[in-house]
Image 1 (tube, rainbow, N blue to C red):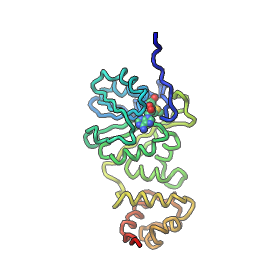
Image 2 (image 1 turned 90 degrees about the vertical axis):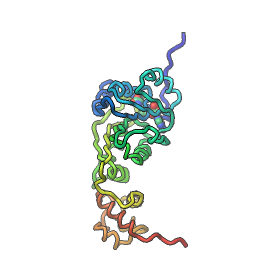
Image 3 (image 1 turned 180 degrees about the horizontal axis):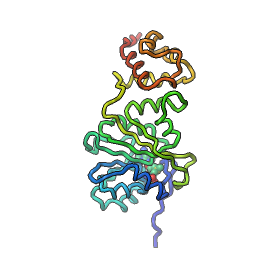
Image 4 (image 1 turned 135 degrees about the vertical axis):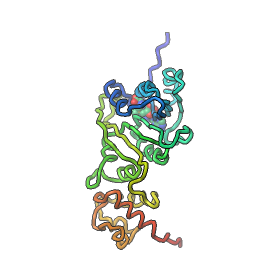
Length: 270
Ligand code: SAM
């Protein structure tokens, strides 16, 4: 008689499968999915969260990269008409193909930690489709996402994500909840895209540029790090003290700097 298929967790896909029923239940409670909603689960793995998400009565799309997991997911859930399996790379996925109504998609995932930051940025490019996101991430990443100005965790990730979303660090999860256990602590975060941006920049790509430049050398003063982008007089015109370090500035101040940059003439090419 053939053995039932046993999937071996693959490191390169960041596979740490949840097995702690208490933690799974707590995550599902935090998401609180309901009938009629449209959910998207990224990296369903062997379905630890998937089953509870489907039991809510919601419509569920999943995106899984590992081909070996596809038959397992199909065997478990393909009979359910509210379930749709998308095989592929979530980083390249076209979220418009889901035909979700604006501001409706609820995104969920115990994410592979190596792709979590680019994936969040890929999702934020489609923020108008998304109602909220619940992710399991490395705890340090959640601390950076939820940080406020003034400390070492405040940086490019906090600023660019908080530009688009309200961030809530919900709870921490120890390595023992996973199989195999990861080497780091994890945490659940909730990201809710703003309906109206609290600090809209004239051009968010310029905000990204200013923030990247400022935090490239976070120990230096803004006057120094932003020299190539903005003269000291422009930093002052943005109502920012150029002798501060980048971690001392809040989001609104970075947006004011980006808006001064938007007013600068384009450098002429030689
Ligand atoms: N949700 C499952 C759980 O909680 O047990 C699995 C979580 S595991 C940390 C991450 C999952 O994401 C794996 O199933 C992995 O194969 C999948 N994955 C990795 N990279 C991916 C990508 N680029 N796109 C979609 N899924 C990916």
